[in-house]
Structure formats: C-alpha cells, structure tokens
Image (cartoon, rainbow, N blue to C red; front, side):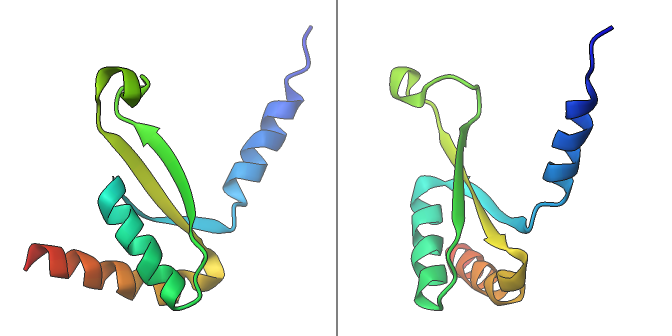
Length: 90
C-alpha cells in the first residue's frame, strides 16, 4: 500500500500561507498596482496564469496576473487597490 501522508503536509503548508491575494487582472493594471504598492514600501508577489492553461505567446490569449501581499501589509495594501479600481471606473 502506498503512503500518501505527504499530501497532508502539502495541504498544511498551503493553508498556513502568510500571503493573501489582493487582486487578479491584466498585466497593465497589475503593473500599475505594483508601482503604487512599492511607493509605500509594500513588496507584492506576482503569480502569472492564463485562462486556458496554454502558452499565451502561442495563441495570443489573455494573461492574468495575481497580486499577493504579506498578511502584515494587507491593511496598507487594500486601500491602494480600492483607490486604483475607483480611478479606473471614474
């Protein structure tokens, strides 16, 4: 019988993450948000993913990016994201 106990450890690591996703969107908006966050000393972590799982360079699909921040920086980062989104909607 195979031992799959390592899967439980993987779940624990993911659940104990110290980062929270604060935005998912296009490259242009994400780059703007990164600059705004870095202006106030927040170091975001960016994760790239595309909608179909295919390489967007090959098929020209839309590349989405996710912005994560450390939970200690969450209170400072949320108002910045809200402000940028409000400016885009205006």
